[in-house]
Length: 82
Image (tube, rainbow, N blue to C red; front, side, top):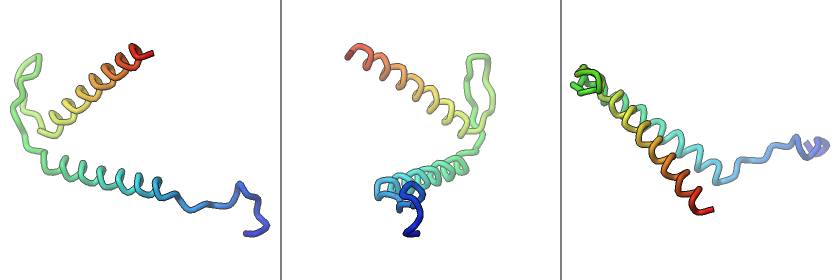
């Protein structure tokens, strides 16, 4: 290993990278558990009618809509600050 070039040597991951990886796997596990526990069918009044839908689908759609609105509002605020 002493004769290998510097760019080929593997550095151990930094503490911050390890913490981020652990957090991602932890949150992914919690999300998977949450999804499995929320597969009950619920009645939802959609725009075009009422259907029986898995609760996790309703939660996921709500999350995606909220994240989209949050991103748009964040971009608007950043645009005004410049």
